[in-house]
Amino acid sequence: MKGSTHLAIGGAIGMAAAIYFPFQLDNAAIYLSVAAFSALAPDLDGSNLLSGKLSKLSRWLRDFGLWIGLLLVIGNAYLYFSLERFYPIFAAISVIILLFGLVTSQGIIRNGLVSLIGIGLLYAGMQMTQTWLLELGVFVTWVPWLNHRGMTHTVWAIFLWGVIGWELEKQLNIEGIVATSVAGYASHLLADTLTPSGVKWLYPIYQRSFKIIPR
Image (cartoon, rainbow, N blue to C red; front, side):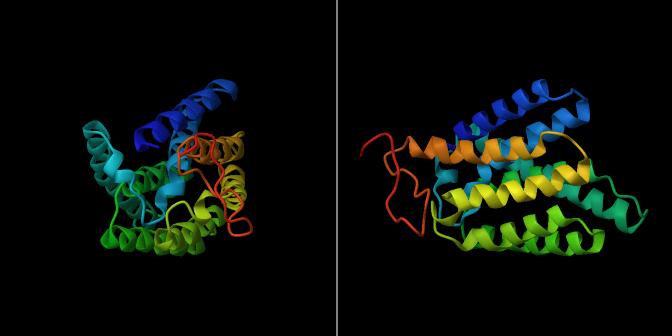
């Protein structure tokens, strides 16, 4: 499934959440960011072909996300370490934008950068006592080295992603983050189930792929 398709589905889920839950501009940005990133997160695994399926517009958005996300993360670090100010919503959006740019890239260098960011998230989570950052850091550090459509494309991964979303919802005190993150992540697996390769939803307990469209 094309990366642009996953992104479009995630965006639709985010907009639906922004409409369904009590509307605030900051909350709407969080819903959109969380849903879009969740819809792409399963392809943080390293050996994927997502970047090869991107349109020119999507590649531009990837590069834009990388640079803007990096600048936002640096800005967050400056606010925290120099001014001792921390804005959870700003931090969450910054991390999600940066990882969005990386999730649509590939290669050993990309995997190393993703893992390095994961380690940075772990450190930030420990320093700020942010459980969701710790859990996201573990996920981001680990998954780039997994095979494509392996552990990240399972019901177990959806559950783990929901745990991260639950911690983020508690931290931000914004209703609907869990539902939005789980729906975004699950949408990726459902969309890939429509492809000829299918998805191993119960891997490693059950090795065969579930697919709706036969090869």
